[in-house]
Image 1 (tube, rainbow, N blue to C red):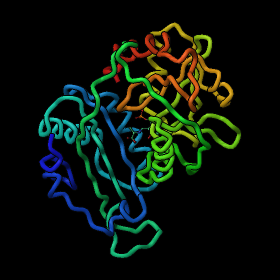
Image 2: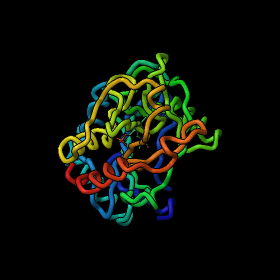
Image 3: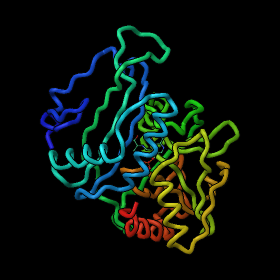
Length: 289
Ligand code: PDD
């Protein structure tokens, strides 16, 4: 899929990426004033489409952007992007900014049209529940210095970008974050789970984390089809350091096993049995959402 010829959606039209132009006065550009989503699609089968669109609508409501696109409209856009860009493993990126004004002024302007952009990009093949082939992640940890509205999937991602970059500079794949009370929040672009004594634990939903669709689906799948104990509760970083397993979840990663945290092995330093179980339940049920 050469990027130049990638067919994208911009304000009602499907056009080549090279033709897609947005005003420099767009508030998405000036203020990061917008909401986005990433939905995975494997061989044209979408994962968690309804919940993704519902979260986007919640985000738009939270920041007062009114948009006349319902879940069926978004599904049409998704299907057209898949048809035009080839099936395979795609992430569908949806982006709504408040739109372009004639001046730069912080308050929400009246009567401007939101800018709606969507495109498809390649993502890795769906994760298989196979310990011997799965990518093993290494992470670092640092204090969460982002804002206090992390439940909104805002396009203002500089805080996340800076934390991700810290990880890159430390030679690891991701950065996991903790608040001023030494409690785990999430990672710069993923939610986080730990496993201790066969109990699967993840932080509760609040303003410190994104309500990840993969997180929510995994919790639901484990509770419906698994036999493991599952808890949503505050997790101290001491518990993270003493965990048997550590996982990252996101739409483009499914459940990613972490084998090293801050240079130390997680558990016995290899991919865990509970990961294998959880990923196989996830593979079997993820298309039902
Ligand atoms: N990231 N937390 C943060 C801060 C995220 O950015 C993401 C997703 C998640 C996981 O959410 P979900 O399971 O709904 O993908 C958690 C996306 C993929 C991104 O920004 O590219």
